[in-house]
Image (cartoon, rainbow, N blue to C red; front, side):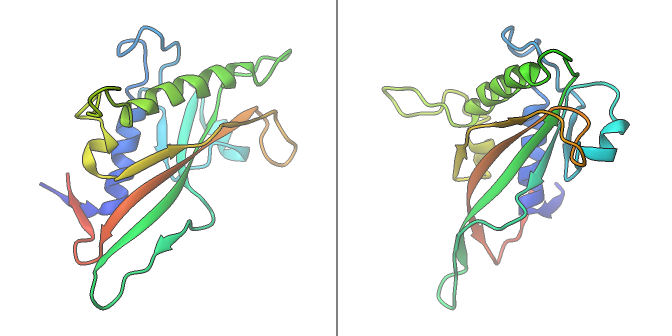
Length: 179
């Protein structure tokens, strides 16, 4: 087993989860994100020209840290909230450039719900192997997507952001995860 930093392990598992969004895993999915999910790479602006096969999405850290509960001398475990942004672009429709993005974000939200879905009566995970990214995180909140038309100086294509807030229990004495 390889040891990698805990947060990087989370990002890699989230990428793998999003790449499962395609018709082969759910007939309701009309988009195919296999090999189209990136980490730490902007998909807007000049970099967007690199992507020929759309849609593509990228997972970015929020530019500002979220709240954390500090840890100190008697406790090496910190409770963190980590905000991530899923950013994406798709083919443009000249008459309604954002319409496809509303469909894409809806399907991404539906797929992400597998990470937190539980049986209504039992409270047990509906998808145990996927639940909370296989136990790497202790909570997940999904905010409303932000869909924008192209903007001069920002993006030549319509784009979206989907904010996620992950809850982590970070043991400072164990900064690595086994993958």
